[in-house]
Image (cartoon, rainbow, N blue to C red; front, side, top):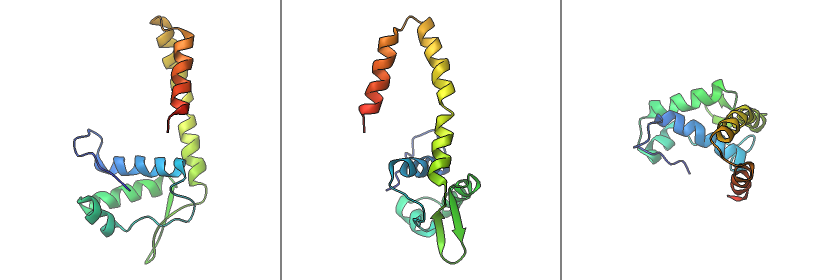
Length: 122
């Protein structure tokens, strides 16, 4: 399920966090789902358990998971909505980028086509 790019400049724990967020948005994870144990994921990905723990702590800090001692780590209520809201904040970035593209001479139709293509993918 999780895949780590060892050549990426993104730290491994952040790759895990980002993938969890993507899994939430795509419906792979839903509220109440149990995440793999730290030990299990550590073996599966061949990475240090502390790295997995760091990722799980970050997910907990963001309110996306809940840790139940002795039972594991579970997707929390409202996790999908939190990730969705965080992604919506990127709309401001899109507006800024669109202005830059306009200044660079990119036509409105090209930008709209690019957005439509992105929506058709996956």
